[in-house]
Length: 373
Image (cartoon, rainbow, N blue to C red; front, side):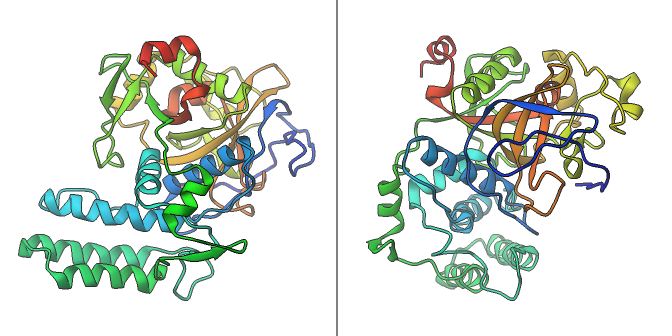
């Protein structure tokens, strides 16, 4: 992901932490939703977990349950337990790379519970931040050997558990939090995260029928889950309705070169004839009028991919009335001039969104009715 250091894209970032500045773009809030602090996935491919955990932490705030810092690496480890077995059953043709999408985090929590970050930080090696390069390489080696031998021996299971214990730390069977004893499952139940069936994943691609659950053909959907497929207009209605009513959105999409500039705090989708000048951010140019056919073509030409997951936390307008979405990233507060946030335009979301996750109550009633939710 190319990160370009450059001048500030100004923004009004509400009461939470930021001051107003004005250069090319200036933003005013329509709805800015309270969320937890920006985290750093560092040198890992675990954005899916950081985005979804951030989304669930915001849900706890919305529900009045309080502010929590939940362990991403607990979820990552439980995710690996499932995917390496899936890879074995597929004769080594599964996906044991770090990536996943949002439902894999909620599945891991529903099945295994969750723990606070203070209980399981997931760094049991000499590093100031997360770094899974060596862990991933050793895991691939163990997985390849098991496939070659066509056997998951007791020693194989010991090796896998030991590998994760060495790099991430042992998972506690019980722990104390605020003076009470919990297991991961009882902690999830206390938080109301033991049943996550109210959270819905949706997509919008025309090679499948709309208003049905369909496969999403991206590598990170390695468990072949089916997502609700809705027309582009309705997907955007869901996002807007959620944010307008205090619900945040877990977002999966593409970081298209030039359009996406995290360090300048913005992602736009210019018209092709304006692209070279528009991405300089020296002037506000009109953006593309995105259609279902346009986003389908970019998906089928592998221009739009599931590069990255982030967290939509607010709805803003620029000085010309253009709609932008405040987005929380997981690259730390020091990476980017907006202290870990950026603004994505409506056109960018229309073109580059691969999937979203929302609470079902955030979906407009007419759409819920069509989906049978």
